[in-house]
Amino acid sequence: MGKTTAEKIFAAHLVDEPFSGTKVLKLDVVLCHEITTPIAIDDLIARGKDRVFDPTRIKAVIDHVTPSKDSKTATQAKILRDWARRQNIKDFFDVGANGVCHALFPEKGFIRPGNTVIMGDSHTCTHGAFGAFAAGVGTTDLEVGILKGVCAFREPKSIRVNVNGQLPKGVYAKDVILTIIGKIGVNGATDRVIEFRGTTIDAMTMESRMTLCNMAIEAGGTSGICMPDMTTVEYLWPFIQDEFASKEAALADYQQWTSDADATYEQTIEIDAAALVPVATFNFKPDQVKAVTEFSDNRVDQVYLGSCTNGRLEDLRIAAQILKGNKLAENVRGILSPATPKIYREAMKEGLIDIFLDAGFCVTNSTCGACLGMSNGVLADGEVCASTTNRNFNGRMGKGGMVHLMSPATAAATAIEGKIADPRKYL
Ligand SMILES: CC(C)[C@H](C(=O)O)[C@@H](O)C(=O)O
Ligand code: SF4
Image 1 (cartoon, rainbow, N blue to C red):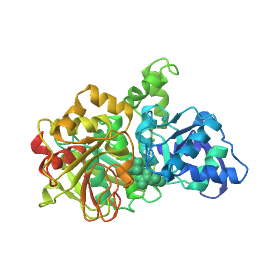
Image 2: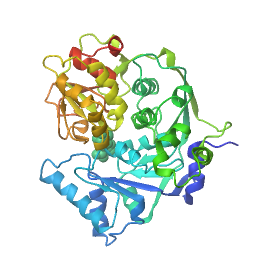
Image 3: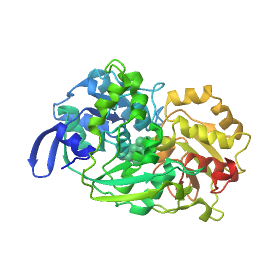
Image 4: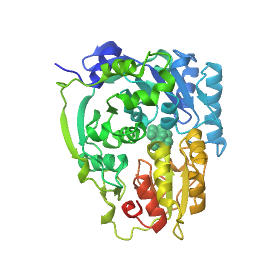
């Protein structure tokens, strides 16, 4: 019987099966940030186990609130910083070199096809875009991962989502994933891996695939997964060229992680890309999704462009294309947070930052910040934000605030009109 990518990765990393269905896997990468890792570090210290399994397999960043905004966040940052130094973790990214974890770590080439990856962060599923099994975990699992380089999982079944055809003008990966979540619901993939397949995915950049996989958790999914292909190889090539004689050789190796044609799926969902339209969320759950044309006069106070979902260069490019020569609507604040310093620099070189500034946007350093309502654009009670992030829970970006999730193109059109707008007329 054929295997899915997730099943292949589980089989190749299995070290123990203490109970039926619970599998202990060897970890290739443990990712850390300053919100959840300090709790694990303090506990390890308290237990007299201030050690790491392999400093080269641990990557750490201060990204959620940076530069620190108060004593509490400064302490969290310091605990992570001191630990990284103490444990000789070389891949540690501090102020000046730091960016949003799920954008920064892939950009550094840390995630490879077939990898097992954990982090104390729910959007770790993003890294499945590389054909990896990447899952968010709680503090106890993180501690064990840091100390022993293993993690116990219940082996998830896979849901296959086939997306075929060409995306219409103004429709992007964000619209695809929001539409999927709208279809299957916030619990539709609970404890499942969502495997994204089809010609639409094949044609997508790694950035777009990361946008898809990033939101797997918003449907309850443990991980999103895309099949490694030449696009994956091209993205990773600067980091792997010494490992392989050619790109073809890398591809041949990585394709061992592709799901078999006769693999078994719990469910298969078909999406016709050509029939998709720009969408946005309404209300407070990411499965409450409707076409942008169905909103009538939904005014916004703020437009936020950034995050691990849509703060990458291609996102900034499309938003800038729409914003060029336009201004923010009166009474709308625009905030751009390029997800990493590299993205920021590229955007500057391409003249994109000028376009945002000319339109009236504020450009922040790379940080999660406003995405989780911690800094750089927190909403006031009753305010509404059009956002390229991934969560619209009540108060997510500030107590009493409301968030509409949408693509960068829709966010840009919304910034110009001051209410949820259709990006297609600007393209
Ligand atoms: C702070 C962290 C634990 C959290 C998460 O797990 O997702 C954050 O990144 C978020 O998006 O809410
Ligand atoms: S950008 Fe937002 S969703 Fe992504 S890791 Fe940061 S807080 Fe979480």
